[in-house]
Length: 299
Image (cartoon, rainbow, N blue to C red; front, side, top):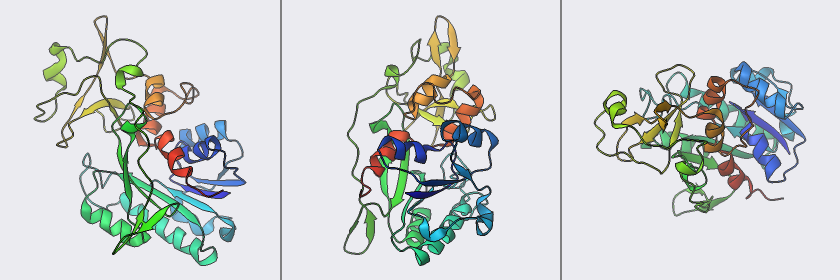
């Protein structure tokens, strides 16, 4: 396949194709974050970097040869953790650049496949706008089925669809629940919050704490660029920083644990600092979920 990956991040799409046995001929990556590009080239040196997505008309690509286009457009204006500016916000509106590129390819290759991902906390209004722009409604999958974290996401794709009475819908079934819990992936200590730290780290009016279940990588932490671990209250947008407690030491998740939370091998981000790895993993796709979706591509 010839693939264009927009907002490529840590190159999860390429790794997923590799893992499910789909041969890649050319892989074009649109990414501007230096350490994301560094990690991509470390694992796949043949990746063709094309730069800023807004300058796509300048890219040297044979568009009619593209078989698959991937997009994980920014979620900051859509997420419940953000300011809810919506799909027309300054960052999330880059979704429409993806639509422009997809429509351009469709004119040359009507059979091009696509995958677009965004947050499960997006409003119904924004989901509707995005769905009508793409001509298909999404499926919704939570990464908790295949990893130890809560990560609720919408996936729009024409890889597998079905027609309902009124709409075309992405028809990717839910993956099997592997039953992986947070306690299964930590490298040491216990995921218990000492009572002494409870008030200090509590945010909002959260009445329950989920222990020994799943966590959620999130880059919206107090320390810029550092991915913290959050327990998420499923019934509200309030959250609480969760720490790992071991022999009187309270710590955040480490690099290995963050890789495991997104379904990557322990050493996948070894060339990066913990902060940089956390930034990419926190913004990225869950690898086993993308593998699951790609398994439905006809060979």
